[in-house]
Amino acid sequence: MSGQYGVYIITNRHNTTLYTGFTNDLRRRVYEHKSKAAVSFSNKYNLFKLVYYEITEDVNSAIMREKQLKNGTRRRKVDLINGMNPGWKDLYSEII
Image 1: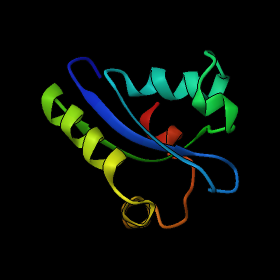
Image 2: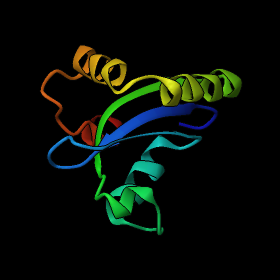
Image 3: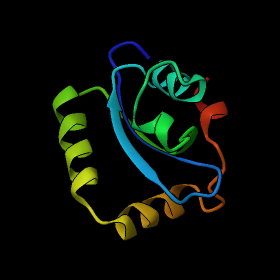
């Protein structure tokens, strides 16, 4: 995924907390969330399940999209997830 940027949403087992992030390496970043590699918000709330992502080659577009999603309501995020992943399954296997 060199030269690609990802905007993603992860959640916990019960889909109660959503975290939106941006990265230049989606595989690595989701793995870090899953393995609890760093002390972070995602560790505190046990967020590990990748339920939504977008890939782009333009870093500025990815940063703007992350800000847009972070500023959006939970309802908008849920609608995005339901549109891409209605079963809220872990999409990590799609990106590895």
